[in-house]
Image 1 (cartoon, chains in turn orange, red):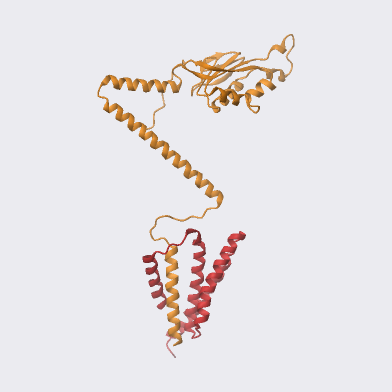
Image 2 (spheres, chains in turn purple, yellow):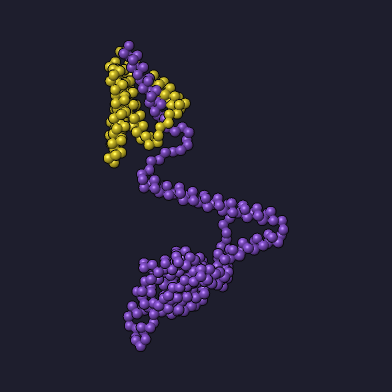
Amino acid sequence: MKNNEATFFVFIACIIVGILITSNFNFNGGTKTVFLNSKDYQVQYNYRNTLATEVDELRNKYIDSANKLQGLSENKDEKNQTNAIQSELNDEKTFSGESDVAGQGIVITLDDGTDKFEGKVIKSNSDLDSLIHNFDILYVVNDLKSAGAEAISVNDQRIVNTTEIYCVGPFIRINGVTVASPFYIKAIGNKDKLKDYMMAETNYLYLLIHNRGIKGTIVKNDDVKIGSYNGNISHEYLKAKS
Amino acid sequence: MIAFLGLFVGIIIGVLWNVPIPDQFSPYMSVAIFACLDSVFGAMRASLAKQFRADVFISGFFGNAFLAVALVYLGDKLGIPIYLAAVIVFGSRIFNNFAMIRRMLLDKTRPQI
């Protein structure tokens, strides 16, 4: 009798264990559960968001391209097609710096603070602080970019993606052209935002003007004109990845 | 034998029923399953030794599972893996019980001299 009782209970217990085991297993081979601490969770969450944004962007790009393709294929008239392609080319040129642009923005003037050198022998390095170096221009241009400037030129040399700002003795070389002080840096963008950003006390331009004795002004302008990049953009090794 | 039959039936029921258990309870369930397994082995040994008592078995079955889950929860809150204690104890007991079951079964089947 006692043995029967034991068999019965063991049977019931085994059924329960079986149910528990199967409920814990995943036979579908679908989602695998991983336990994350809060930091990992944060990382994964951000990763998911990045991916979602990427997917959105790609989808928008796809819709744009599909619309463009449809527009072009619907236009049976060859002239219309040429016009559409031409206008797109112009747009692209505007963005890549190959055409003249205009718009609201700021003009920054920087000049060496050489007045104090008058009738004086330069002895210490600190005197050279009031000269403008290539990296000063580089920092200012970088700051402008991060402030959201859409087009930038230094002494009418358009800053494009291949532009170098290089030190050549007493001058600076930009786009292969040697330019000298004073520097006129033009930038197109939201003029208030640009000026506020550039003149923030922690920013490079502010330190340049207030700590280094460089003469600088910054002027808002409703119609800044920036010329096109006048070199030629050649691609010898570069290929679009298909 | 009956144990395997029960396990089989339980697995069938579990697969067909597909009891939804929230993911965050998964670690608790693992330890609870271990505790239940330990009780089952204990019961089999006791029944072979003819010492089986239903009240002891039932209280052990649920009590052990509950205690194990409580330990896991406490460990989770305190930040130390107390569940390891449960796992080690249950694991060694399962092996002990299995060794005794083995001996008893072998003794039974050994030809009487």
